[in-house]
Image 1 (cartoon, helix red, strand yellow):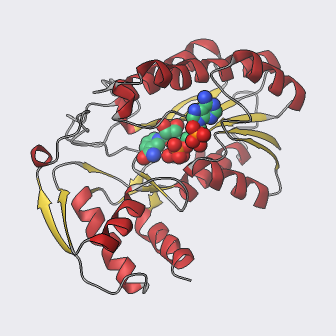
Image 2: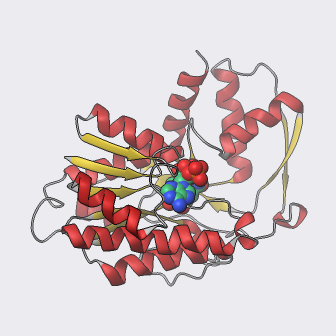
Length: 294
Ligand SMILES: NC(=O)c1ccc[n+]([C@@H]2O[C@H](COP(=O)([O-])OP(=O)(O)OC[C@H]3O[C@@H](n4cnc5c(N)ncnc54)[C@H](OP(=O)(O)O)[C@@H]3O)[C@@H](O)[C@H]2O)c1
């Protein structure tokens, strides 16, 4: 397939370009400097020139706290940018695959979130992402929106890399233990998106368009995640000391934007419709360390 990938230099975008290329798709990946999704004219022209079979949008404004003071930029990318891509897809009559986030929810639900649960973002980032999802829904029915959570991988900034960086400077860390979710690797997300577009269901006239959660298991707190990161980091030989980790409540680690207490996603719909199983983040973390310990 001819796949146009936006945000191709981000943590998911980089893996997506690599995985799609490995699978012998014809890939047109653009970073923000090569294709600014908030510019409709640029988007339309590029899409008309390339004439892809599908667009995968991995571009987003992702600075959760900074978005509070840069809301115009966050909305330009996450809302207007998503709408621009939907308009371009509609013009060419091709599907749009878009990545959304657990941060569209407030986290007050005690159980994993379903696609049918009412979104209620707690900050500008989540609100701008939600508006982007809604703009896509209103503009072009031929879309798949995939909600993911707690992304980690080799590229860009993420919790795993932050933990490893902090371990170089300190022997003891305090980690929030009252926010629960599921880490999801950028590689697993990339495989999920490509698996979807390669299915029979996707390539038939009546594709089950809509919003889907990509589940990752098991659900953990940030503290539990950190414990596993350092366990595997030591096992892989990447670090050779034992970190002292202290569980703390969110109230002891205030952030400009309140994080959802629960952002675990229920991926049953994706499994039923596209036969895509939940990711296993502990195995994916092992692969991350395998690549990084050599
Ligand atoms: N990271 C997470 O924990 C997380 C959790 C849930 C959902 N998600 C979603 O997953 C998707 C991928 O996120 P990620 O973690 O890969 O984020 P990322 O590493 O920040 O990558 C996003 C990419 O989008 C690019 N971008 C920003 N503005 C753009 C514009 N106007 N036009 C084109 N590209 C632009 C950025 O380029 P520059 O760096 O040059 O600005 C960056 O390379 C996003 O939709 C995000 O909302 C992420």
